Length: 197
Image 1 (cartoon, rainbow, N blue to C red):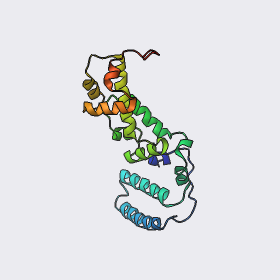
Image 2: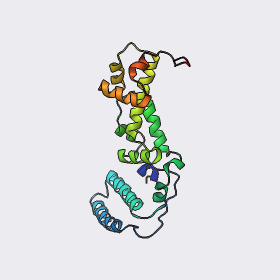
Image 3: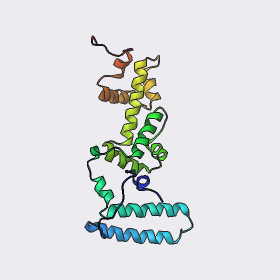
Image 4: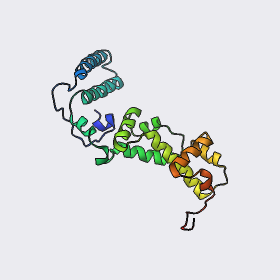
């Protein structure tokens, strides 16, 4: 059976406890009843299919986590800046940094850390107040910036395309927003700025 972290992208060290025996919001009770009926009905015809059973178990766990007051929900409601990023988020960040030069997508990042894309997005938002797509874009901008700083004979448009930016004008806008200068200014500077610059 999966851990909470594998299902939710949250802290694997969290001890899960249900804090009350009934759903804590009015509509949660109705949702709980309908969902349990659906899961029970779905299980009847697929008991031998391990993949389907595993997916239904994950759905049942998520249903409990979102319908009842639990330590999981309490942890989610804490300020995200007061705790370290979950290990799955750290692994995702490492994967992004190591592979930003490749044509990876957020779905690829999620698969690399064994999470659903939605769970990864939620984990990033809770832990870092950003999204995996924003982090991937920032890593690609940084890669392009490093290449421009090191000097290249390629055009800025070629560098932009190599780092996943199909439109040079969008690349320039994103670059300026991130670094305060246009890519051409960085490409013209082959050394770190000195106090005289």
